[in-house]
Image (cartoon, rainbow over the protein chains, first blue to last red):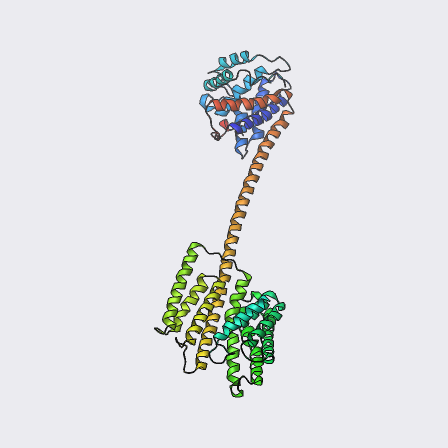
Length: 149
Length: 361
């Protein structure tokens, strides 16, 4: 799962975000942007291999929220596949500490604060704990290269 | 020179086995020596045979002229026999196949020996050493003596001449020791007169043919022959007939039969063993090939798996081309997700796909 998961996450985000980016030329149209999840999952759908099916699952569910207010379906809690819950945390965390055309990269501390605040509402608390354990163990390792794109 | 010396010694020994006429013995080992040396060394052994035969005859009886004539007959016999065996019976590999062994019996033992008998007995008669009335009888014993000599001694010499190396394990030594003790005991019973049933020796020939190699079987035939001749010359055993002539014929029939039963049987066993060996070798080769194939398949499978993952990554990378912002981002999210999964205690292959929620397709 771990080796395959890394690749699946990579693939899901790669295709999903690319699809999203194509649709978010006008970023104000948030509703339209939400559809990138379905477009990405659609590209990955009906795969026969474990890798593609995991990628589809991730593409489809990583914007769901723990409290059920996410999209595209509004799944709640354990109903969200674990893969989606994990990638949701990783996606937001990395997004915060990466620079964007419209803003600078923010610090790891800020990212941790955002994630911790979202525990139980946006994120699965267990996954948040796993992130904290990782950040405590290797505070600088993962994000040393986050600044450069 | 060595051939001459060996021939000479064998002839002198052979003459001591004679019990009817000094030059007509029940078995004439020099015929076997002549055939074996020419089949192994080629026709260049001819002069040695001539010299040995000449000296042996000269020192036994007769004149220079009869000795020269008899030696010519003996040498010619070897030459004719060797020529025929080289041409029709697989040369010195003659004992490898039963069919060639029977050809050997016909060509070398029966046909070519008539040459020596005819020249030899005629020389003796002309020299006045055998009476004309005895001519046919002396010719017959001469001929049969040479024939059995070829049949009994040539195989031993040719087989050992081609391969002298002994391969005996401790167990093989034990069996051969046991065999020898049993054979000598039975010989004593049979030829000592206690129990004159000569067919009791047959199981020993079969034992030798089945359990030992062909050379050893030939040696057993020689041993049995020597015992039989020695016993009969002392008027012991089942071959003692009413007349010396009868004894001779019985003895020669026994020796010829023994050789023609044991040697082909041993030949068949050799063929069988080598066929078995070949089958085993092929089997092992097949297993080796299978193992190799399996290894190849595993290698190829791994290569395919690697290619598959690599393709997936390239596909993701291609998708990211559209989107500089999320390119590296996606890779890092994948890596971080893997770390989180590990921290959550998930093991490899723990993920099982669920049906997509909400019926999205």
